[in-house]
Image 1 (cartoon, one colour):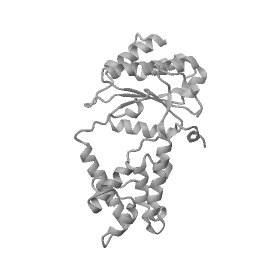
Image 2 (cartoon, rainbow, N blue to C red; image 1 turned 30 degrees about the vertical axis):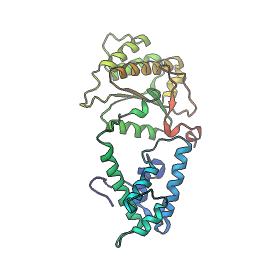
Image 3 (cartoon, helix red, strand yellow; image 1 turned 90 degrees about the horizontal axis):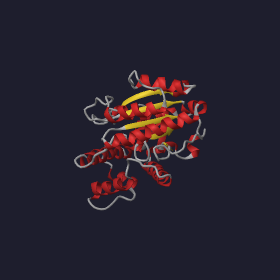
Image 4 (tube, rainbow, N blue to C red; image 1 turned 30 degrees about the horizontal axis):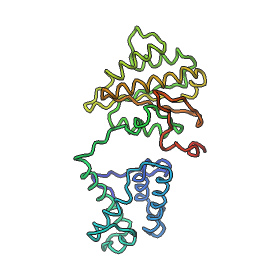
Amino acid sequence: MPTEERPQNAVKHWPECNDVYDFLEQIRLRPSMWLPGGSLHHLQAMLLGYQVATSVHSVNEPFNFWAFSQWLGKRLYGDSASYDWAADIDRNTPDGSTPVEEFFRLLDAYRSETVREEAPGTVRLPGIEYMSNTFVTLFWRQRLLNQAVQRLEDCDFRVVRLAAGQWSTEQDMHRAIAAALQFPDYYGHNLAALNDCLGDVACYGPYDDSTDGTGLVLTFTDYDRFAAACPQAAQAVLDIIADQARHAAVLQRRLICLVHSNDPDIQFDPVGAMPVMWNSDEWLDANRRG
């Protein structure tokens, strides 16, 4: 049931979903595959399991299950939370509709009202998930990196992509970064010069031409290969980026670094006095296997 506010999404496999809303869209597109007999109780059980999993693994999800049940209770009965919302929707499904269709109609209404309520006083800082702990975030699955980059580009970040797997020497790295960020001709091709020139770019531009003043994203693919060839330089580069990103943040500018590694066990020493962490989808070791 696509609406003007919510365009029809494409069918995809569940591991490609970004969050619970994305997962629910797949159920909306193919309800007979996910919900035997069109039973909302199957959906309720799945969402309960989803909620437990996100709580156990400390995953921050945009869907507040408790808030939705409270909203639904008020919508259906005008008072308290709806603890068995599947049965409640079943009982209140109007003629000409189905419980599944009614659930998604209510879900769309909940999302629409929530957005309107949060809009006046809520400031959502784009890219904050990659800045809250450190400014450097690791990725193993390139699919997740691509999704993160797309979200940041959609928020008007400028993304500079660097193929670190092609660097066999420190000089290869310097040449690539200098060209990508248009460092001046006097760039010294050493780590001290990288720190100076990256600081100029991070803190003063001109990388950021967007009206919202969003920021710059550096992405490194196959960084494990560069780390194997030049371990000290690979560590130093991330340290310099994290340090300059912190300086940029003081000036209300944003520099984010997303690092792809083919090695799921790669580790770096803390950078910018902060540890280099895996992204939230791959934070558990088990999520970087298979």
